[in-house]
Image (cartoon, rainbow over all chains, first blue to last red; front, side, top):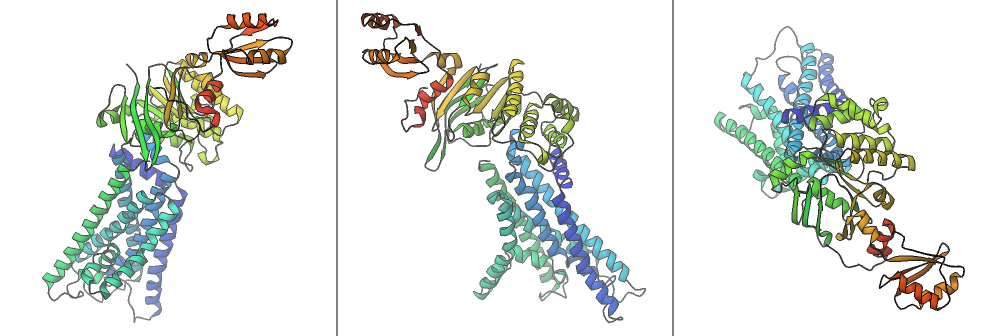
Length: 265
Length: 307
């Protein structure tokens, strides 16, 4: 049944004009972000290089924060409208269990995150390919670093999207939910600054949006690029980030599930 | 065995008691009208039956099943709508029904006959945001009927419709009831209930005032209609009759309730005063009269609830 629910969620998203408009906006922004780098490199007469392998870190992480924001917008559009139109209620009346309904949304959320990230890779990757010169300037990083960066960017997006899902099932109205979910970025940054000012930087680093920021920073995955004193410490820091992001996703989804199943529709 | 059994069902929102100790049964083949003014707790009760509102207390059983898991299974045999038609506006009528069919684990082949049944086949491939309210209601009915559920529950299915639209929906529900299906119809339109329903429950402020067969409820009022040449004299004479209550002149006749329910004694009394009646009848009260009597005609008085 879950596969059917997932198929229905994809069908609903595919048929919705607002989804396509949001996706086209995202693609345009990605073309602008990577296009600026590509043309900047072309105009620099060799001083700046945007091509493989140097561009890979940027391709993997630069657009990820934007992708996470668009993921949140799409999740809010696909979840909150179900409350506005009361179709969530009708789905339950028609025979869907509440957990099945929410699982469908979680799977949709993961799909949106993946599609947006792959689109980012496609746009950035194509422009980087176009800018690649015959002679590579630097050696490739180890493949594991790229894979880790890609997984980190995706996990960060899922973390923020899970928070958006929690706001969706709590607020249940598209406009306010979208506003709260987007303003949260500002709130999280301010809260982190305040905490750091109070010498609580260790706590500030684990706030959901700070975790996303850290996971979408390529330096995080490079032992020589992070502030760690040793390779082991750097890997430990990255591992902790993955752990915290996963814990946030699990916690936010569990709370969403509790709220959705306990509240009347 | 009753299809739907509700015992002491209660729903409280903070200090507000939306449904108060509700008890009733719906048996197979009945068209059960759920009647009450706005805010009487009808939709909340239906919501609890559908499982989208959690009761604060009481007992609910569907097809004899009453545990949480068994109830969830039993709800698969129930179809219906709550408040307005809940449709995806950007999807076509056909796509909306396909979604419902997939949720109900039915083949796509069920969709076209359902559209045909509500006469929406020609508009099936248009987005529902362009549908009239009547078309949306019909589509919601078609969605509810998919999979041929044994119990259909419709909440205000004619709300906001023009007389023609109301007639269409009424005909559709009547057709369903004739096919032997059990239907619970939730409405505040009394004429609708009187035309369609076999049984009725009347609610006010979350409390059940009366339930039973429509014929029983409307037969209950001991109102008599009297007519003679001189209405004024008749009205005065009846008002002075010790057993008469609620005397009123309407439509060229005098109406009164008789405490002893014996019109022969009243006739004898009037004849003693030289008043000879041209008509003495005991008309059936309409459901509207019964409803207004029970609910206090919009006043603040709250008649004693009858289980």
